[in-house]
Amino acid sequence: MTTKIVAVVPVFGAPDDLAETVAALGTQVDEVILVDDGSHTAATIVYGPRVEVISLESNSGIATALNVAIERAGERGASHVITLDQDSRLADGHVRRLLGLLDSADPDGAPIAAAVPGIVGGAAVLLGADGEPFDPIQSGQLIPIGVFDALGGFEAELFIDAVDSEFTIRARQAGYRFVVDETLEMAHALGEAVPLSFLGRPLVVFGKPRHVLYHSPWRTYYMVRNSVWLSRRYGRGDRAWMRRRNRKMTEMIIGGSLLAPDRITQIQAVRAGWRDGRRGILGPISDDLRRRFRRRV
Image (tube, rainbow, N blue to C red; front, side):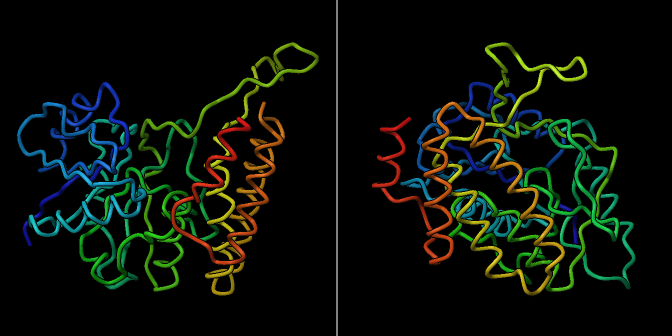
């Protein structure tokens, strides 16, 4: 099968430098497919050749946008896709190095779901006891197109958050592996860093200003809701993996919520996410909850 690599990029509120990002991608892949997830901003930008823009009528979530792009990539003869967020920036040779990892895999071993970069947004990807990447984000992954034929696409009902985790645990439980290039770095925004303060002064520990990653209350809602749902759906199949993910997620949510300037609304978002996750309520956040959070913020 001829190697043809297509970059798939969900877009919501196209950034000013999107054309430059796409142009840089074009030096590493054969084609780029952008899916504008209801913001109607990507199609107004002029791109170079080998770029297709698909516009969704309404905001359907990152999983749906990815699935639409992946399906289109398959129709265009892709052998692999690289999934990317609109704010991710690839290092030179990113695709080439990950493709080399996939090509060098033991053909008699377990099938590989994806090859991933080892450093994202300046942070090293966590590894499991087996040396595999523990819970890699979807951005920057190089995935053989046949993996989606075997496993299906991303879980659309999650809308946003834990979409990559759900794919990872589903692939693991189906016997697939993930491989990592531990020295390959990808620029990516992991959240808004809000400086911490103590007694009105910036908090400095060991000479470094300390920050907490801030997310909006509705994003906190998705993080909690989808993590609860994920645990109930897959936890029994891989208890150690799920315990570790839940511990990391709890640390991030507690830090981001209790230390945020809108901590009361954040706590309410945590409670609502916990409730809906246990009830199996998925899809986009309800208009009522979004209005309540917006008023309080």
